[in-house]
Amino acid sequence: MSEFTDLPKVELHLHLEGAAPASFIRGMAAEKREDISGIFAADGGYAWRDFPHFLKVYEAAASVLRSPRDYHRLMLAVAEESAASGVIYSEVFLSPDLCGGGDASAFADYIAAIREAAVVAEATCGITFRAIATSIRHFGPERARRAALAAAESAGDFLTGFGMAGDENVLEPADFAWGFDCAREAGLRLTAHAGEWRGPDAIRDTLRALGPERLGHGVRAIEDLALVDELAESGVVLELCPVSNIALGLYPDMRCHPAGELDRRGVKVTISTDDPPFFRSTMAREYEELHRAFDWDEGQFRKLAVQALDAAFCDADTKKKIAKKLEA
Ligand code: ADE
Ligand code: ZN
Image (tube, rainbow, N blue to C red; front, top):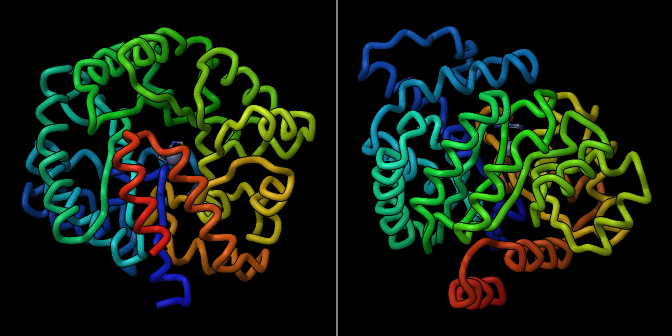
């Protein structure tokens, strides 16, 4: 328990499968008599070497989640973990590729089950959830199209956004424009991972080609201060996941992370965990480390939570309800 555990938090960037506790996935594998023991370390956590291997381990862990019921259970487990860190509003990424193999009607069944779990979690854990459907970049543009079509069919007051995760080094943002256009036409709000593995030019290309209002990570904007100014002026929001960036080797430690400078230069930054058990993170740990590195205090964290709520992909009434909880 840290001094920031009880501060109310808003999280905008959480991969649902990536948030699965290792013990939960081990239990699912045992139920299904699947041997995925190679993805676990001796201490029971996930074992991966680098980003490409992380993606493989992630997909192996997700492979034991095979039904809407499995995701219902996952959502409840994730809600408990988030609540223990003081999260009161959370947007979870889930992929039509992993939930129903890209089929729109199967994806709708997964969304229904996850939504049902979210209603239970709201009553028991006090967290409000929304969902963002994500295409997976290294699965290629054709599967991203199918993901967007599935997302468009399930768009509504629970599934409110569309995005793209996966390996940023694969192909170019423009290759995925069709999916983002389709999702936008369906009324979905947009976010895309960019500026994690590639630099400022890739961020510019992503903004131009896909038109997201938020960027997953976006940290490497710091390598071009003109781009940082543009982000600050345009109000594009960065979903920063500092502990993830350090675990994956982008920065050696929190003092070297650009969160402090991006914030000082007026960029709208928010704080999330990405895939917490993979990086041994929690929202409380993110806050604790940011406090130690940048001397961020309760006032700063409250400002960031309000900033995140402003950028949330939910309706105005929900925002009002969460805003009241943040003020309390
Ligand atoms: N999927 C899960 N975590 C991710 C990350 N950090 N970057 C890209 N895709 C991801
Ligand atoms: Zn991510």
